[in-house]
Image (cartoon, rainbow, N blue to C red; front, side, top):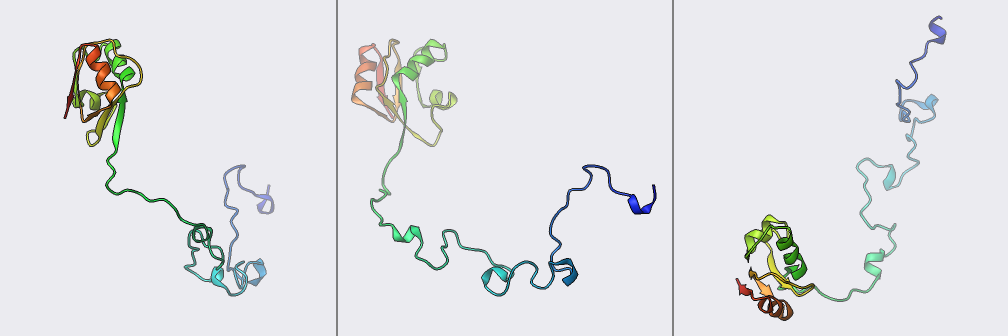
Length: 150
């Protein structure tokens, strides 16, 4: 072993980046592998999202349609079969209110809750929510329960 054949341990070095702008002899001097002129050769260049080299971008070529109603009120839906599952698991016995739904992660505290009519409800429950569908309300009352609107 002598100084001419020393080399680092296998896997200890991993920097194989181009060393740019370190003189002509490196092969990456002068323009530092950026070519000549143009926006890409300048410092601070960043292409805008969707930029297509000056061609009209797809986002602007395609016709727009539809609209978003700013006054729309979103409700978080909870189905009857979900309420029945809460009863079957012993989580609720007689009342289901907003705090119970939040605790069981069926809604967040900032959401409005609407009870939907999928599935069937066998238990007699007093359900409190912001809205009910007609089928859900009928099913709750058919099971001997009560539907209370907040």
